[in-house]
Amino acid sequence: MDSYSDDIAAGIDGLLQLTTDGSSTSWVWAEPAPVAPSADALRQVGFAGSEWVEAAATTGPASNLLLLLHGLGDLPSPFATFARRMALPQTAALSLRAPLPLPLGLDGGAWHEAFEADGDLIDDTPGERRRTESLASTRARLLALLELLATCGWPAHRVFLFGFAQGGTAALDLMLHAPARLGGVV
Image (cartoon, rainbow, N blue to C red; front, top):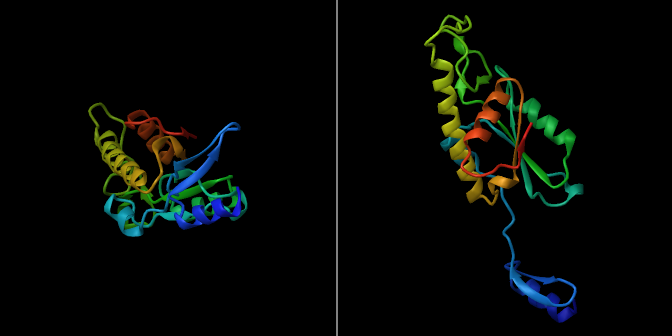
């Protein structure tokens, strides 16, 4: 590109970009860079206390997003640390805080009901629906999160899920019910 083209490109502030396919050059609309959802927007869809992790500067701008879903009773901070240490190329991460509280005022969270009010585990008895009903509630929140992420520039096929234990259950459930193909699930 010559300096005249450089000046034009700088003047349109990233709205267009010059592409070359080998035989011709043309201007195309630039895809806006995806952004992190605000803490307020995360709170509104039910994920207050989640932690955003920017892509490592050495790997280039983020075009992928890894959602991290911790296990029962855990918090997002260890998973945010894990994302920073992995430093996946061109990948930002959002370590989610499970939306359901633990009994007895314990810190941490759950993706679906697991305990009775006294702290005992819910028995696996015929007709017991609290776990599946609460998982459906979490699914609704995760689907709202996917909609929010799309408005921030993260299309579903660029969103990947990493779930551990109960977070893995929620990740697989979301993958099965997502209205669009997600990038993958671990």
